[in-house]
Amino acid sequence: MNRIIIAFITLIFVASNVNAQLSLDKLKKKIQKEAEKRVEKNVDKGIDKAFDKAEEEAANAVAGDGEEVDESTSSAKNTKKSAKTKNIKEEETEVVQETNPIQVQWNKFDFVPGDVVIFEDDLKGEQSGEFPSKWDLSKGTIENANVDGENVIMFKECNINGGGGIVPLLKNSSEDYLPDEFTIEFDAYYEKHGHTYRILLADSKNQKKIDKKMDFVDKYLRFNQNSADGKGISTGFYPGFTSADTKNNPGWRHISISFNKRALKAYIDDARVLNVPNLAYNPTGITLGFHNPSSKSVGYVKNFRLAKGAVPLYDKFMTDGKIVTTGIKFNVNKSTIKPESMGVINTIATLLKDKPELKFSVEGHTDSDGDDKSNVTLSEARAKSVMNKLIEFGISSSRLKSKGFGESKPVADNNTPEGKANNRRVEFVKF
Image 1 (tube, rainbow, N blue to C red):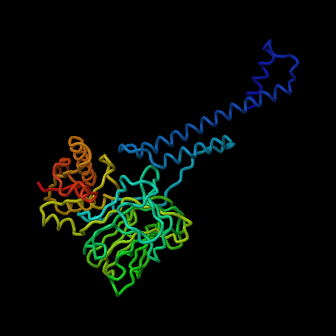
Image 2: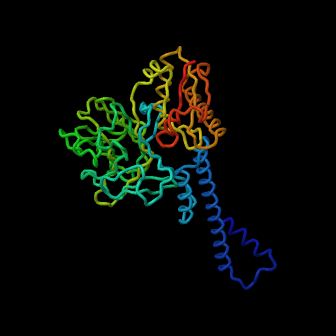
Image 3: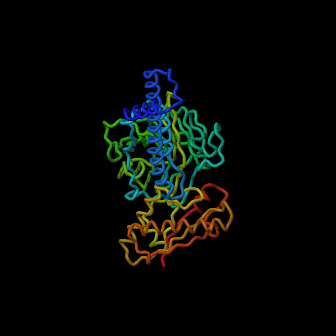
């Protein structure tokens, strides 16, 4: 800073157009002010470069598979704007990156969804403010909403202990409509620690008298953002969390439940948090709710699916000569594999490692949405993505090939969401 001032003072004596009446003290103050402005400007430029680099790295991390930049990039932009509005000293300027306490490692995920979809709600075509068209209301205030461009179900008020929540709109809802083997999946948003989503394994509107041995409200599973429990079921925690951990970790969680005759498993994201060998009661239906009887907070869910089946994939292969799964999911109109698909892919990879004589043709199929040619191209790209993921896990490329059939081989009616979900499938066919 002193060098800059001296340089400007020297210019005073050699410049002939300097006002001779301008006092040296005033001039020094003016020069010092100008120098500080320039330094501050350079600091801002340095901040911009640092944040631009952070944004670029975040964008590359998610844009490598053709997807849009996620919330981490948006957060960096917001932090950049905030930092520029503060009076930051040059030596204090740095980029701070927060780390999510849950590091998702889907390569160990072992949940395998049922292969036949019997109820699905992707919320396509729903209007915000209206009641979800595929559900019936048991009790409470629940409606459609839009969050970050996606349709969701919003729970504004719901006392699930008092019978609140929503139930699937099914024709046989007063009967036991859950198979002996079934799976449930949905995404839930958690804003604060202590918020809970609950699944009653009974229809609280239509099945109150179906089981006289047990009150329907006791047939519940409860999911916190980092733990789960239920009636007579001890609390299970996501790895790295304990009962004393109340730190907020806002964001979406993928909830998965698998029931096989009497045994139940439940997952939060990639981790199994409940493993119940004997549930002690018969699940008969579904009630979904976010427990907020005081209406002081809201909950959001999306991508709900109920599917039949929990048979080991190798048993299906021995029976059918191939493995057919609707559990491998992709981003809309893309071949990017969703993380929750890894349970099936991990199981297939293990099967191939245990049975070195097996060779699979990975075959992709779509529903009828879109034109035929585009669907063939999409199904080919999706099948190739699955094949490449198996190769990443150490399976020799000589044991795999891929092919796409588009919408040409439907196994269900394309006029319902459930039918379309069953047609969007991946088959592993022996060759």
